[in-house]
Image (cartoon, rainbow, N blue to C red; front, side, top):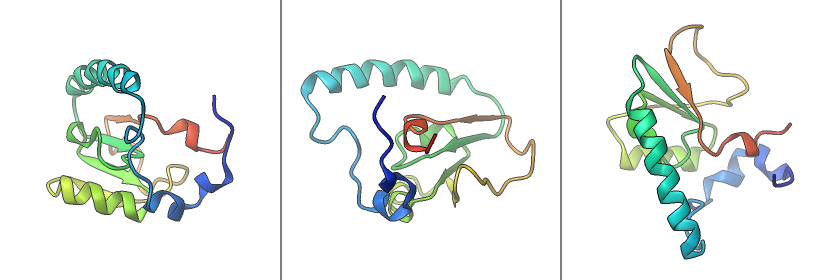
Length: 116
């Protein structure tokens, strides 16, 4: 696991970040495609109101009703690609929702960016 980077806690750090896969080796793309296909099949099977916790640039937002991220830049990019979805700017550590609003929540490639 990668070491914690103190920049991760600053939303502005993420505002200008590009998606992880840009500039990655070709083998990584094959690995990511295989994993994404499996994950998309699983996400497609989810029922009820769903939250994408740490939606980032919207890679998996098509499977959620609401996306949450604390980066304004990431939310702007994903809103442009998915204007039909609802988005909330918030920290995953302090979500602004009442209990049991969502039947399902998921996060992809997020936990490694939250301080242990």
